[in-house]
Image (cartoon, rainbow, N blue to C red; front, side, top):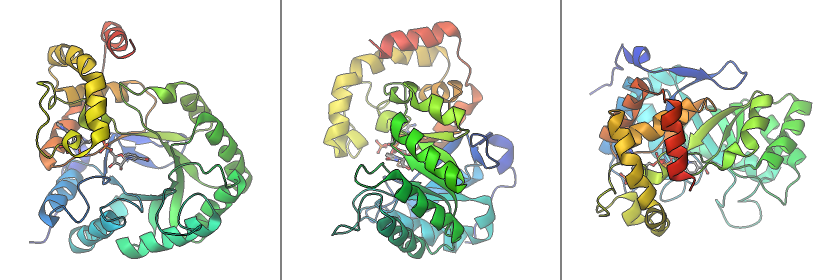
Length: 328
Ligand SMILES: NC(=O)c1ccc[n+]([C@@H]2O[C@H](COP(=O)([O-])OP(=O)(O)OC[C@H]3O[C@@H](n4cnc5c(N)ncnc54)[C@H](OP(=O)(O)O)[C@@H]3O)[C@@H](O)[C@H]2O)c1
């Protein structure tokens, strides 16, 4: 059946400016890193994308290597777009990235002009798009001069293949270096995508200041620490097919952090929020972010997470308690 978007979708979501730029992103965006590969069903992927759009989530984040196999998330999103969302293209902000290994040989990884231009051309074909709204350099490449990476990204915008440029996983020093290059070129560099959650505060040590002072927006990935900051692991069981069940790294992080997670739970309860809602609200309350980039394995999680917007204020006592729990 043809999809018609909920006419009330823009009433529920909050939209924030990307730094000093004209582009606004929803306070909560959806990423397609997991659960959009070829192991997933089209029905579940479609449920998540279309119902998210009905909640006012206008921004969907992909990367060249999301799958499995690599490239599948762009293809699957492209199918949903073509079949159901075509008439809403101008209401969507679709991003992709390049920077990690994508194909064999010296031109399928890194930050060279050769890799970045070839990769966005492949991504456009897979997603059947004329342009991406945001194209990211997925990680800094120490073997490519920042000036070359910036020039490639600038060219991508001038060729009309992307409207805006972003970076991801850069350190404060790497961000400062490429900002100088973008400024020389006049590139619309509007956003950085780092990991940021209650348990991982690395960006607070310099990166936030550099981005803010340059008018660059920030969208936080892994806001729930891949699901650790939810209610699902509190009883110390790992549910079948959860992220911790599928990833050894997440299971190890759970082991390391379970005591802190348990201590956070009463605070969430006192706020009438689930753990996931409190974790997202806490990020939005920092005032550092344009958007929180969540992942999900089913739509019910997205609905729960978007309800975090109903209460994003924290008292100083709550913030101090959270810091005492997570930073010790
Ligand atoms: N730039 C980068 O290098 C980079 C790296 C990583 C991610 N990202 C981006 O960030 C996006 C989000 O990353 P992420 O998926 O790790 O984010 P996350 O929001 O920290 O974790 C999402 C996972 O947590 C679980 N979950 C979510 N809501 C839940 C709820 N309410 N209750 C219980 N469990 C819940 C689900 O896992 P299960 O149900 O499967 O357990 C879900 O797949 C990615 O899709 C990608 O777009 C970017």
